[in-house]
Length: 274
Image (cartoon, rainbow, N blue to C red):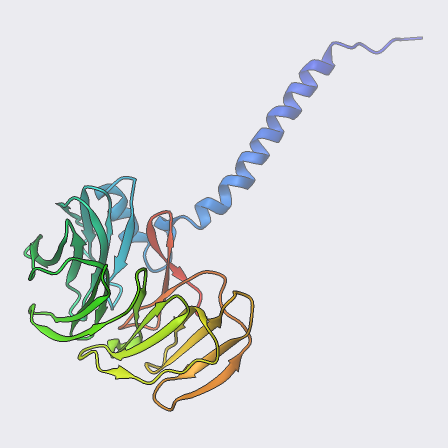
């Protein structure tokens, strides 16, 4: 009887292990490549430009209302890219927030100052020290740690002021940049984005999260705790309608385009609508 040789088995095992590693690498890398920020259908070119201008770590990002410009910031610098693919890097320490106003101009909170983009540099505007920013149709909203909310025009003038009790509030502006919301510990407050005149908002529950919809006066809220009922609020009419649910992740609705954006690896990426 002829005996089978045992010599080929180690080689066969080695080949199988190598093939397994190749298959694992391909299957785990492919989803990342498909969903990479530089291949995003709307922001891929901008993200590629930003990645060259500001390597990690990146602490936050902002997108202009028409999606033509984007910015990222880190501990020591802010980078901006536009349609020409040429990045602008500005050395700024301590950035906390960034946003674009309705005119596509960048605003940054850094080093205890409100800064506005002017000719490739960031210049201080007033003596306000915001921790949160959100652009509106005629300028920006800036919220400081003490809960002082200020509406600033694109030229730097104060358009309105309000007080939001408590710390850690989340600030956002809806489609067309006309209405603003401040969410703080389940309490929702709504304002005219330009003047900060308060508007009535009576959600049926403590609010855990909100998503602005395409209609400027409508938003989707999730009730606290998360996973409980959701509602669509019509802020002008003062009505509410039960909604099927809320998105799994937060996303921002751009002011000038019907486009939602979420963060991915420190960059802006396209998000599904709520």
